[in-house]
Every structure is written in C-alpha cells, then in structure tokens.
Amino acid sequence: MKTLQRTLTIIKPDAVRRNAIGDIIEQFEKNGFRILAMKMLQISKHQAEQFYAVHASRSFFNGLTDFMSSGPIVVLALEKENAIADLRKLMGATNPANAEEGTIRKKWATNIEHNAIHGSDAEDTARFELSFFFAGYELAK
Ligand code: UDP
Ligand code: MG
Image (cartoon, rainbow, N blue to C red; front, side, top):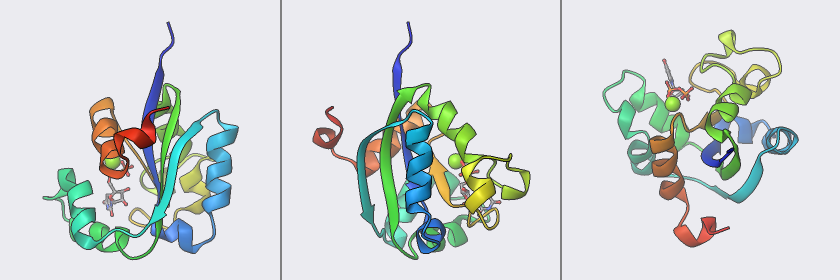
C-alpha cells in the first residue's frame, strides 16, 4: 500500500530576494506535491539556531543562522507519496556545483551556503520541522 508522507520545505532568503518564490512553488505543484500549509515570515537568529540545532557544532553554523535570519522566508508543509525523498531529489545537491540539471538548486542556488531551499531529510526530522513552523490545527487536513 502506498502511504502519503509529509515534509517541510523552506524557500530561503536568497531565493526570496531573487523573486524565485513563484517558480519554486510551481515546481512543487508540477511534481505532484500538495501544499497543505504555507506562510511567509522572518525568523530571528535564535529561532534559526533552534531550527538548525543538529548543526550547532559545525563550522558553518554561525553563517547559516545569520543567513537564515537575514530576510523573509517561505515555509510550506507538502504532502505526497514518498514526499521526503522526492523533495530532496527535486532540490538537488547541497552544493549547487554538484546539483543535477532540472533541480531547484541548479537553477536558483548561488553557493553551498546560499542554496535557495531547505527540505527535511528523514521522517523524524520532518516531524520536528513541521511542528516547528505549524500548529496541529494548521496541518489537520
Ligand atoms: N551549509 C553551509 N556550508 C556547508 C554545508 C551546509 O553553509 O559546508 C548550509 C547550507 O545552507 C545547507 C545547510 O547548511 O543547506 C544545512 O546543511 P545540510 O548538510 O543539512 O544540507 P541540506 O540538507 O540543506 O542539503
Ligand atoms: Mg539537512
């Protein structure tokens, strides 16, 4: 039996600044993702540190959290069969130099830090990330 899965994606500040919101959302819809919930907001440095807590010990943590709090982002809850892996595929590699043709990062990312989009990487991180940005009632669909 095929089961629906949910994932959390973020259109990052660089992509918002480049007017890529519409293009990226079109990619979600064209690739079979249902948009369950969506909002535009700006997070604080502290909120970015909480969201990316798994990377707290990494050398790029300070730059990453400065970047993620530097301007508006768009967060979406997406639903699809195999949503987590399929979104990662549509996003492309973290470093756009390695991203395949046709991926969102190939088209919109500038470099390994300013790489246009976030996507959950597993079921447990998807649960944490969805609940970080959305209340239960917003996902009750
Ligand atoms: N990042 C960075 N430098 C690196 C690796 C990652 O600035 O060397 C940033 C980049 O924005 C990336 C985020 O940290 O998207 C989270 O890293 P992760 O390895 O989880 O990549 P992702 O899951 O986003 O592909
Ligand atoms: Mg990741």
